[in-house]
Length: 231
Image (cartoon, rainbow, N blue to C red; front, side, top):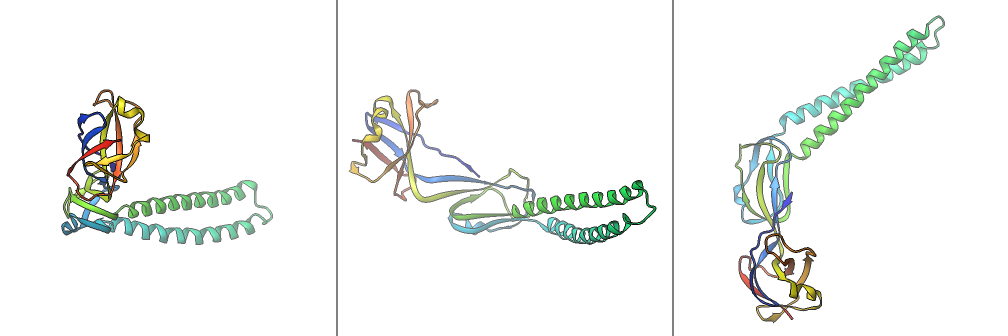
């Protein structure tokens, strides 16, 4: 998942700023594997979701997994037989070291095949685990694909938000930045329990000589502008 934070601040005067109330986090949901979307419910848009939002076709992977698991079972049975046979074969009088080594090489080759199958099984299980995309108590803003679309790994599927709390992003001037941690935060003129969550110690590249600060607040008024003061 990737996180994107977007906010354009408006400077007023020292210690006083206007900021836009934004969700705590924004998530861009991407497909981690390729295939056709076989489940996607548009009715889940603009609602809290705690569960599966997308399923990608996994029939081929399930068939491959069953095949690999059957093969590895047979290979392990064959390995047991070969090892038992080799233990008897190497005690036979008159068998050369070359003949014994040839029998042992069969065991080594079979063990190598089993290891390759184990890797194929692990890879297939990993792909299968990525065929379903779930959200955990997030607000699903919108889907960017539709059912029956074919997606590749890296295709953006949806946008979601964590709205358990809200945030404000402001860009402090150098004067306010110096003692900002010792000051209380007032919102629209009222003392608040807002917390300074992050403070950049390097000046911003866009807003020259300003320092980016992220403030966590308890609000659901997303999109509204609010006055921020430090006293």
